[in-house]
Image 1 (cartoon, rainbow, N blue to C red):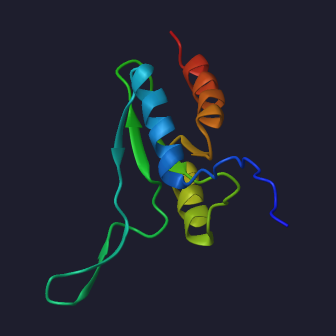
Image 2 (cartoon, one colour):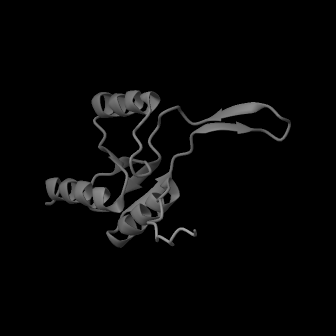
Image 3 (cartoon, one colour):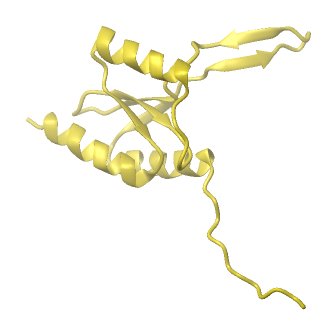
Length: 120
């Protein structure tokens, strides 16, 4: 006997969340720049580290509000230990604003508070 077809909700990946967040930021006048980090292989086969382990994914700036760093995760994912350490270092040591989001909705909530706190 054949099982009936069931429509399933697509699972979002990190790229989907990044696209939605970048679109949201752009509509509100924010510019986001990717902060590259990780290992890459050079053409001659050597491994090379790019950036610092744990650095947030995006630097985000605006003409009217203080900038911030943003770490994007796919829904349900958590930051890893390197990221926790680096975020703590940047918040405590440098006083930087950092958000960790897994949806455009979470970013909207965070942005509303960030912008409200810095309105003139």
